Amino acid sequence: LAYGVDNLEYVNLHICEVSAETMLRYVEDRPDAKTPPSSLDCKSVTEKRIDLPKKYWSRVYFQVNLAEYLDDPIGHYVLSFSHPNYRVKGEQVFERTYITVTQLAVQEKKVQWYDSSYQANKEVVRDALEKTQRNLYWVTQFGSLDPVADASVNIYKYTSQDRYGTNRSVELVGNARTGSDGVALAVASPNLAAAIIKKGTDSAIVAEDVDR
Image 1 (cartoon, rainbow, N blue to C red):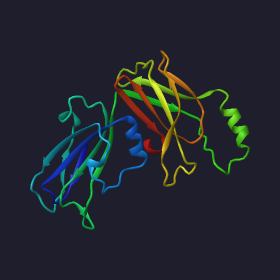
Image 2: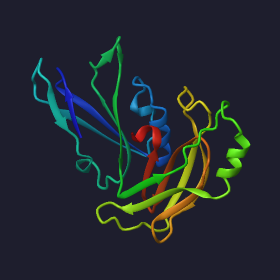
Image 3: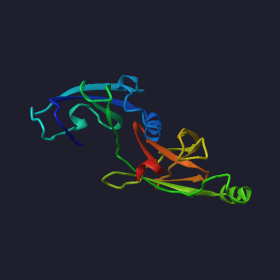
């Protein structure tokens, strides 16, 4: 990960490890830039001061490699960067990066179904789509592309029909498991937001609106 800063001699790095469910909540509804990292829902925290060359009026670049700070970087992380003088209208702000490190590669093929008040023949559509399993999740191992069997797939939908509104909350709506071929099939559901795939201690997230 590469970053650039202007007129700072150092930056403070706060690495917040979160659960897959918390990461989904954060990427759908980002914490405010003024929210201190101490307020985040962290499983574990690593902090580091990154000293920078004393150059002014010229951009300085630096890199962050999670493997240098974590024994096992597999997981979901919120990286917060700060400096006491980095402020907006007098208030300290935090720049954030949301990152997942995983060995699971997930492909999603789903029915694009949005349940809105403008949809005609809603019950007919629902009856047709919910009869059979129509959504597919294919889970393989990064590098080898070997299928990942018996991985859990937890599927979430938006609680509001206004998916681009201020309410980006999600709720669990279904689950499935992959077979020996790494494929899981699930019944179609309207207003799907994301899926969390887990195998052992590893997990990955597929979320249509934030993966693009």
